[in-house]
Length: 287
Image 1 (cartoon, rainbow, N blue to C red):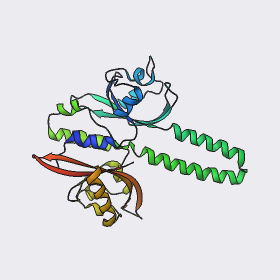
Image 2: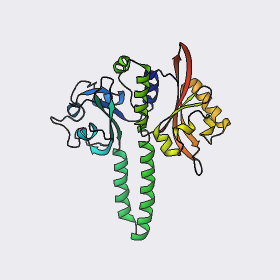
Image 3: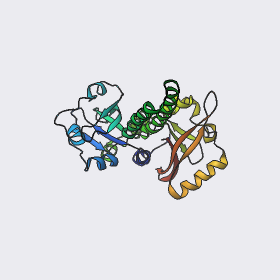
Image 4: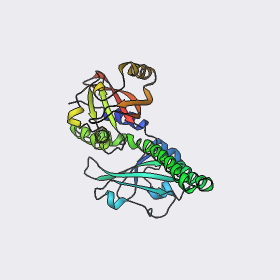
């Protein structure tokens, strides 16, 4: 079985996430914040009440999904922060800890610009369009905005980085891999992990949903079995990764049925130690 250095891999995946992430306990205490959320809050609020640190409230938020999440649900919703009236799309999901407790993992994307653009679109079209022509144009532009939203929220997926302290406390490698798999499968972003030989070592549930390839079919195949992108085009990606360790661009993926499709992706390289030997892996994440 492939052995991961979970901390390094999660940090690499986490670096490509375009929004905010935090982990909290059942009693609303923040257990972890990513760097973007620390910058938004102005300080690291680990240990504080989430509704007070993030929104400046004295009581839990009206939109709080704690009850549903701690009963095993994954919940997606939109809300407006009372702190600065910015609008966010949030995904909260339960995550099992090694000591048997459950925490709530929340991924957040700022949707303020999207909603502002949508409102402006409606105002402009109401002023200028005829009923028939305006409805057609409005639908087309609204559709384009929805596609932009789907592309942005796909970055959710890129997923959770467990606290380094929690990772160090995990006792067995098999337990670590199980926790890593839970985290990656909770992401709404498609994730593919490939070894230096070009063999697919892992795909998450979202990848299977998008492409139609089941895990037991695609894992063990080559990179070219999941991509329509040519070897010549991939050579440019490899050269960029050698210098920058990261590449952002569009790759064309194969589908199990029907034509292939393009998807905006981020590729990171991660070097881990396997039995004290360095091994390089490539992490492809939709953004």
